Image 1 (cartoon, rainbow, N blue to C red):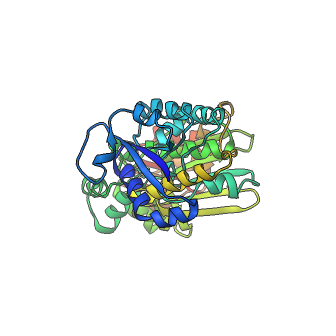
Image 2 (tube, rainbow, N blue to C red; image 1 turned 135 degrees about the horizontal axis):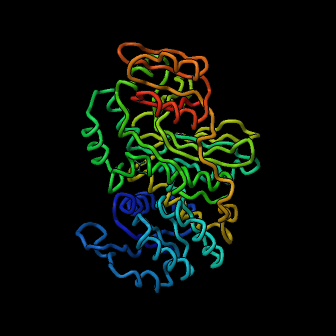
Image 3 (cartoon, protein in one colour; image 1 turned 180 degrees about the horizontal axis):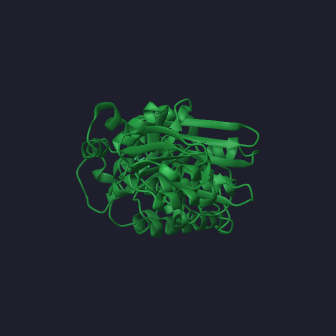
Length: 397
Ligand code: HSE
């Protein structure tokens, strides 16, 4: 019998306990022994099927040598950070879905895991149930990764889809996403692009091998997005989606950011709706490879956690290819990155038109919506300040 502990019994923690129980036979067949949740760390005791396993004392896990893997689903960087360090110090593997902790402290925790000869695995931190980090670090290991981009937040994709399809208000669509267990405890992180930003940092860390400081990554969400832009974009053959992008720059630098983008509707990612996420990894040998599936929710995310538990137990002695350098040099602001831009401005374009190269006007009716030639982020920012700008978004190349 292999014993594990779960720290935190929210949506994902509950899902982990359910997957371990409901898929016990498949898991045992693969591990050669049954897997059992022995202890569940909670802040407040509550009734339910796991009542007998609950403790509010982390030392019950730390000092229990029979517990080989700890699943951290507390979230944040407070208690989760401290307990993760202590669990690793105690020689236990740690598995997590906590993207904030991995984005901010992953490099340090991986180094500690290495020192203690155990695994720190976090497949569930990006893309929920979609396998993304394993393919990136294992299956595509022979590539130079030039870009990773994707729809990385289920809540905002769900909100956008509901608004466009059913005309639901932003507030109602958000409430639905919360009821389905997709949103973070504080949904500001979803709506303002911070959750997608943390996932983008993790992808960039692994793709480029250097720590990306989340503080340096511009993160813009969907709270300022207007349905008018969604409709105008659709008429012109584009869908608007919140994308995280991590790009290797021609000079050898790297950049990353999160923002709503116009996506040509023939790009498969344009059709990704509801809570689904999709990640495109561009390898120099493979070209674009796309991963698609449920990016949030109890059981999909738990599936990735439990698979990591199984891998931690089977990896012999540990997964070596997961990790990156703490050196943050070479990270650049996305201002240098060129692309076409969508603008909607008050009034007409007038004399400003020439500064955008070849302009494609989408609508003129008291206000003007248009697509520019390729310009840099810096130029777009300057123009947005000069004009009476109502919306300004990159077009995915
Ligand atoms: N709140 C996140 C989302 C959960 O909506 O994608 C998964 O990380």
